[in-house]
Length: 124
Image (cartoon, rainbow, N blue to C red):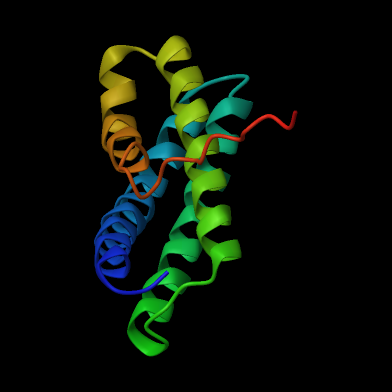
């Protein structure tokens, strides 16, 4: 990935990385208050991975001015996972708790045209 797509990618990665970083303590706090909260642990792990991946991608944007297709694919896959986790959280948490974990922002950034997973075509 190069050029204008790279600029859009960097913007999405910076925002998503920052949200991932800032939301982790909120998840930990809520996890301590809940029983049987594996879903929060999964979300926390997803945020940590996304933060690291976004930092790496921003570094690639600045230093090499390109991102490999495998890195983009990994990013899209992680976005898909976070979006699914947010769906689970929405069902299990109160509205106030759900909003506190910033799932709406995560879903929005992962719904960005850059972040969407490409549809697989069927072989005939």
